Image (cartoon, rainbow, N blue to C red):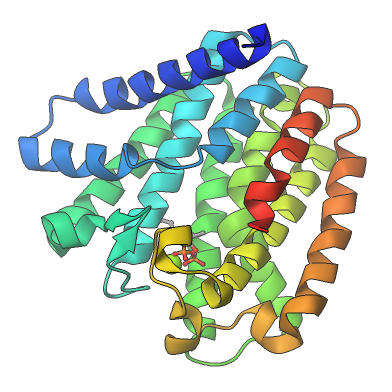
Length: 280
Ligand code: FPP
Ligand code: MG
């Protein structure tokens, strides 16, 4: 096995331990602890923390700091998925191939588990002591909530193409923008092009997620397929079709590669996961 691959596996194992540790250290009541750990430890792709740590590597950010950022970003993502699956929102009984948090623990506990993880994520980020990073993370959370609300609103009244893209940018792009700009931000560099790359990546990621909702099986995606149509979701795929949506995602993807020219390790990580994202 290549030295680089070995190191990557090692760091991902440390990430899993750290995710667990940052919940266990809170001495919570056992139901909340179990519920928070349940979704956090379901096998996910860990894309956001991987990108964040790679961005940190490109800008010589200490590994210890990068790991904390990675924990924060994955916790925030997990919190958002727990809430997204709730009966009042997407009402999905499955996540990552297993019953959703509210199916396992009840709606009341799932709401608390999501709340806990998102506050803990902010906490961990604040502990890094960089005000610009903390501000960026809080703004990310606001974008996530606003994006999700736009998604909810557009399932009641159809959205136009631009509104849908804006919703994708916020609900999915914001966390990628935070991860892609982690290294340069901590080194006081201009983060604009890295954030833009993150938003573009997130939009194209969401397009492929919506295509997967139509074309994939439960076994392939680990969540209920054909949900978007049933729940009257406004998606770009429903408005312009699969082929046009893919073309749009490819245009964004080319812009991602262009904007990440000065972050070579992140650029190569993006290329590594391209197949996973496109699910083709
Ligand atoms: C999944 O999208 C959901 C999101 C990308 C964002 C969810 C955001 C929130 C619930 C607001 C933030 C809340 C907290 C607690 C941080 P999807 O439904 O299109 O994808 P799916 O098929 O994987 O469910
Ligand atoms: Mg959902």
